[in-house]
Image (tube, rainbow, N blue to C red; front, top):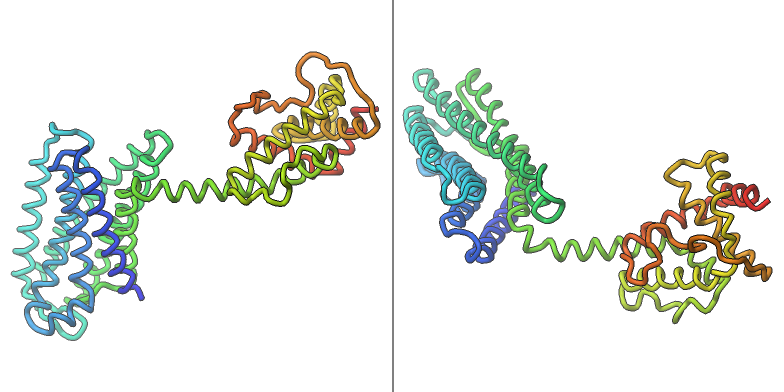
Length: 396
């Protein structure tokens, strides 16, 4: 199952990085895009060559014992080197000094290959065994890999996290945090090799295949890095779905308030029963407008002196400060509905009775902000005992 997931995410990673190359080919320097492509190809290739299926495809022999193992580690180093180069190229532009880390990467890859060759690994079943004479080179191989990887990945995490922390909310910030998670998974994936070093030092042998945790961390790395790098491709669709879900939730949450107003002023409901036919966003917009129309229809029945008394009584009743304003709005609305039913009218005072504090009674007010306010009022409306106690004390 995990191996299948790793293959699937490798395909997703290749597709995602390929799309990113096509999308950004006119907005980013060619060199920068090659760094991104190199990272995607190396990290996905590094996972593929170390899977049991690849080993079974190649068959037993020196290719599986030497070439695939070394290629897997070298591809991981290459992926990290490309990631650092890509990051520096994006953040510092053409003036980025890429040579120092490129030399560091090249030296680490050469030293890794030399140590691996001198360690003379021998495959025995599912384990790789080393002799006592070549064990120091095997430990050196692991030390080089860990030292280079942890230093470079730590640098990447620091850069991405700092940039995400200071970025404005939006797709860029979300993409950066996804990259932080992906690189963090790569850091954990690499750090897990310390267990191999411990076992190698104790028994001169290590597992020849990726274990379950390594496969999970590898799949997580590809998934989150590909998601962060290609966020601009799929975030609009996800945002649209999330927007519809939020609109539907708000639509349902303000329903008690809307039902009370519809009962008091039946004419506010246009084509009842088909509110969701045009989608949740439009249904929410209609419901907000209908509630606003209900307020306007009851305008003459709002007591202009009631809000001040209701506010004092709400605080006296122990209503939490954030809930005082919605409670006052709910109290004045309930009193206006009752006054309308009894035919009592009031002269308008200063301000607009029954106005929505967060919407400013503007026909073009932001529907999202107004809906959020109405959700709070509806929540206060549903606290019947508190509402009745505050209204009774305020009216009397």
